[in-house]
Image 1: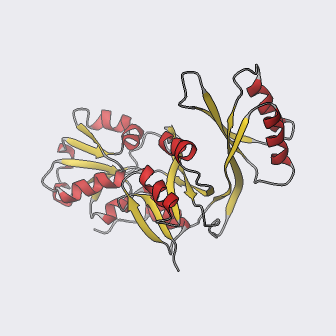
Image 2 (image 1 turned 90 degrees about the vertical axis):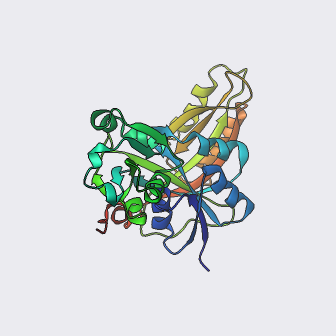
Length: 295
């Protein structure tokens, strides 16, 4: 039986690219928001939720982090990193005079990632923010009379039969997004290769312990455990109250990470594991976002 997978929709998003690459035989269901995806997995409506966690240019997706920490206890079972390549798409009816567009539709992060291109080529264009890049593409497909363009990927172009008139319009070449798979019931999907393993934990510091963060980091340092990320997030209990989200380049074991947890808890810190998981590298993902668009 194929797995039911929730992803941030509609069809043609980078999140669908990630879901399709890791779970090609799954029954995929688009949801309009990240919280809706996570809620579906938490309630058991789907087996797995695929949501964005971090972008190389714009940083963490705070909504995902906040819902993981404050709303749901959904373990991270895997991550996949997808290269983000943004293109300017128009309806085929506007293909010949695309440089006369007056409106641009896309997700806020995609708009930010293409800021220099927009300012250089369409400084007077009105910007319209959408829930996802593919919903912007869908908007164009449904309104061919509009002199508008969407910023989205080639999967969205193919899905909604749009024409890419300018490719790779993003400001930075090394733009990638980390997506995580969340599930109460499923194990890590089998793929051809994984690059490394991570454990993500949330650490809350005691309010009356000077130098607590230094000692927490020391617990990892003297065990020679590499931290790939450390980020503070508000606890939502008052100004100045923060916890730390830490990614450790190590799978959960019987010695090192339990030793860290015991040492940190002895300092009076709170520790919660969000997941211990592989970082997946499906070989087909490049083909999915680079394949030619049918004319």
